[in-house]
Image 1 (cartoon, rainbow over the protein chains, first blue to last red):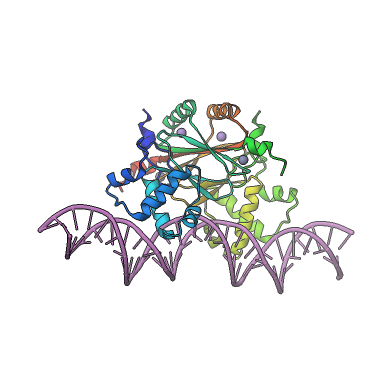
Image 2 (cartoon, each protein chain N blue to C red):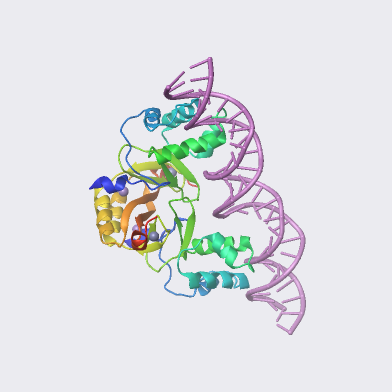
Length: 156
Length: 156
DNA sequence: CTCATAAACGATACAATGTATCACTTTGTA
DNA sequence: TACAAAGTGATACATTGTATCGTTTATGAG
Ligand SMILES: [Mn+2]
Ligand SMILES: [Mn+2]
Ligand SMILES: [Zn+2]
Ligand SMILES: [Zn+2]
């Protein structure tokens, strides 16, 4: 009964995506054209892997217009290939979605992003939802921590 | 061992606050001055109770400068008296923090906000955290749903 | 391989949500 | 009452996007 989690929350999804690693192919399968710009942006995101901000991508790809970078990210979000995570300071990072439903950890010092999955918490959330008025369509969750590197860092 | 949750995540806290209902008194106790503007803003927030956006408050209080509205909200957030919640559309709402640690539900149709608390999920999160490298300082979590009113609404 | 067309693009303007600055006002206190 | 510190408002600026619109490009029908 995991299927309820497949329903995407437009901006904040943590939904599964097809296990293919070729994002371009996925976009093409959905009817989108393969353009130089999309190849460039997707290529960079796949190489990064780690979290990134939209502005960061725009700066590193001066050949691609800013609007197009945002448009492409929006497209990938809608297609469930990216997760958008709110940092505690108010900014946002994007990160490649893995195949399975998951959540993220964020270091409040350095912003490093990690992933985790835990079936118990999912089961409990499902239970909470079934006791609730209305129809659950999704959830989001982040753990904030001070990462090991920051704990071991030479103070402030 | 609930104390770890008292550590505030600057923008996103869901932390407990003193059970007094007089927010002004709390601010004064922390050394802040009691000004006309703060009384006005706090008064309105206490009357509202429901979620609100910063801009909404600014518009309804033309006697108080926009910057001051934002400053006061920031102050109340820092003091743990407000929760800031990200809506799935990218906007933010603020809502009065209750005394106890809790989380929110958001209707993806109408934006209505609800609250819930569940000790099991908290216990599980604590367990997850203790198995994790680094030191957990907090978490956030929202359930997205279609509220009963929206389910019963006359279609689109 | 054309070529027409829909899709996508870049430049730019605009919008929303805050934050920084700074001259001025108010508050709390002695 | 007077003073210093805290707070305020107007305004400028910053960030993170979205809308517009004239131009370019990808695609696929012929
Ligand atoms: Mn989950
Ligand atoms: Mn919790
Ligand atoms: Zn760190
Ligand atoms: Zn609703």
